[in-house]
Image 1: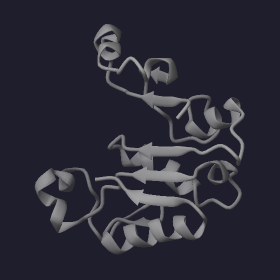
Image 2 (image 1 turned 135 degrees about the vertical axis):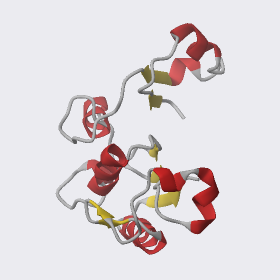
Image 3 (image 1 turned 120 degrees about the vertical axis):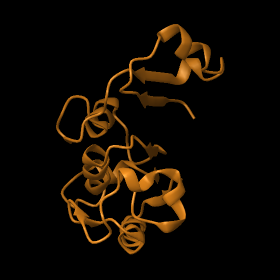
Length: 149
């Protein structure tokens, strides 16, 4: 690994944050204490950052998306399936905590922020079947996509 990029919307004390980053990772870590945006063209989007960094298809990029905000997460995740978006060609491994209706996860408070199973969020069905289809579609696109619990 030669770079780590992270975002956090909640304001953190920089001293406390950096004390918790292992010394070997500090030279590789790029931290933004602000929220990421859902818009692929915004200057604070992951899509824009990848283009600015000059990432190529030969680079290995693992992308973990877990911000517990479906209005932001889902558009970013769906952009990986957008045939017109160059974003997907740069992502090799995708880990995503998609909050969907699942009885197994009901004890983890997922139901408090998860749409009803028959509801869709931007075309994504929010139940186990919709989640499996979404991750299967990503894999068929060539992205090793995984549920992030």
